[in-house]
Image (tube, rainbow, N blue to C red; front, side, top):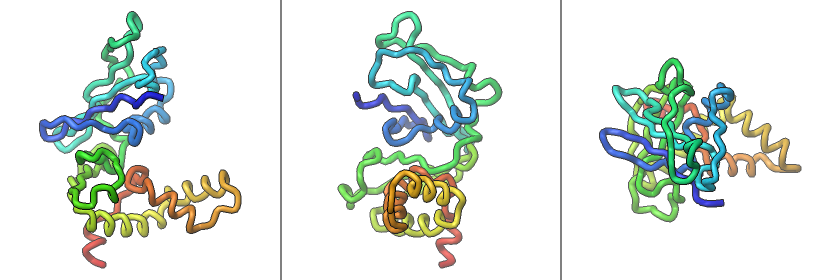
Length: 198
């Protein structure tokens, strides 16, 4: 399969490419409202999700700025804007989590241990803060985040999923698989105040 076309995020006037193979900010929305997803045919193998989105953080809130689908007239290289998928508000009230915006775009942190990693924290469509960490700070944050994540219902869902699909899997293996993508999948973020109190 072709590399998928990235979505775009605008933050503080700068455009960031969001690695579409690693993060899809609209997936939960279309799970909640499947009838709103346009199922236009596309011959573009780099756009199998059927749309390309532009998001923007404005006035401390995350919005869908633009949603485009392949043109129904000419499928190759032409797009048209659609708004009917978001009839009430373009604020992404359904989205919570971390959005990675550093230049490494979801490459393994271990390959770039001298880098600075940047994440935007969002809770129910509200922009909470930008988190900037070096490699060591990121590793510490991940450990604390995982400790916190294990206390949530989200963790239990992933745990049950792996127990169901992989025969004889150990708890340590499940934790390892969850940790790999923890900052991408976690919707509840460990609070900095809790971290400082430890």
